[in-house]
Length: 121
Image 1: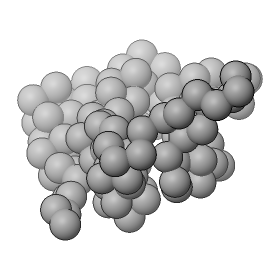
Image 2: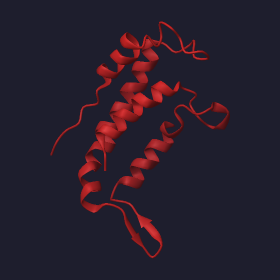
Image 3: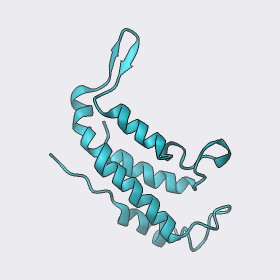
């Protein structure tokens, strides 16, 4: 079975060295630093490697099924969704006033790249 390693170093390079995210702070995110972006990428990478990637083959094999007006997702997908929701990943760039994490959209894009590349199913 293929393994997945999240490209956290590559994404950190893009965020810090190419985009200079913390050298030229995004308005409203002055407290965002290199350590914080690395921690977010590392945690997203763990979730992708340990939870999402192993479900890729299951998702391809089982797919979603509509039965009696109810959609049934592949084995393990509900648990993965619950873990993503519990970890606050669904609202990473959403306003904290509404339950989000309040991170810049560019961080959400990097995390999304990790999640989608781990499991396209």
